[in-house]
Image 1: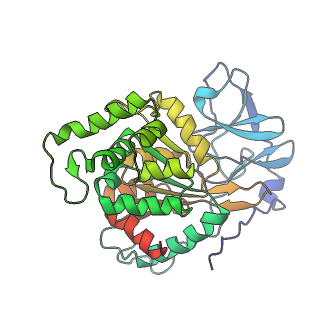
Image 2: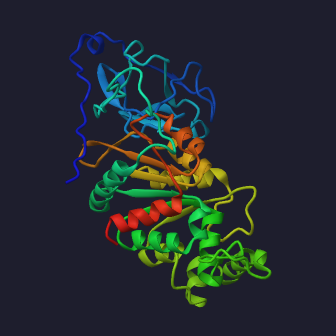
Image 3: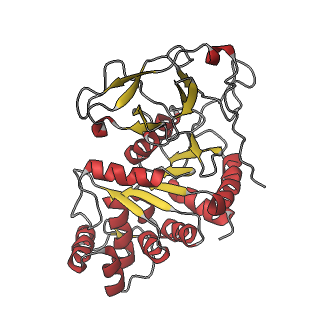
Length: 361
């Protein structure tokens, strides 16, 4: 049976906390501008001493700043700061400026074994069997007790078995939100509509005559109907990732790109509107799985803390997986810290089919 790791709060009776000064609050000089010496947050729990009390910034996010308001420590992006917002200044992490970063609240195992050892990284030579077993246990727990957010590149839509496996995960409660781009939805809908992805048969991979038109024809038809939901109904779509999301009422956020075709109607053309919509889903996520999309996974990773404060005040760990056939893509995010990102180097189509089978779907 899966068990969440307990969270160990700092011992605020220790001298370093008792004797620490209050954090210094400085007003923003203008909208969108932090004061000089602002403190930038991390993925870890961070506490700030205000009027003698240590306050946790409950939604810590990388590259944001702590704003004190109405007795709480808010977490804000630079672009949404307002003139005179009170921002914590100071760039120390161990109470010197009334700021404490708590990187090991879940007592993760570190530094086990010899200083010199082989195969301590995550690469194509790593054995991932245990990772799959842990994922099966985690996902069964999160299906009923958490929120699982998937960050997906278009590679899934190129394979019939991967599309079917992802649909089963969605329809069996293992997906609570999807973050992706125009391409994932376009090629998945193309697969359902014309049985191709970028003009290739989604099972045989054989290129179809004039197949390079298929994704454009799909986008154009969706735009003709005015929405994905109306397209699915009017064209009799019966399978696929986006179909299953619509069927099960699962939200999906499609962030636009300068290279997009069309795009599909629900795609966010404003990058900051897309970022806000992604944050709305990430804000309550407890497990995130990024697959075959380096930029979307890094973007999501940057806005995902290593912990979550639940409605009852409990602090729990956030699990983050990065899955890609490229070691570079996996390790790019894993470098953020062991608490929040674990890499699996594999073909993502195989990965999702293995998950489907391992979960008995």
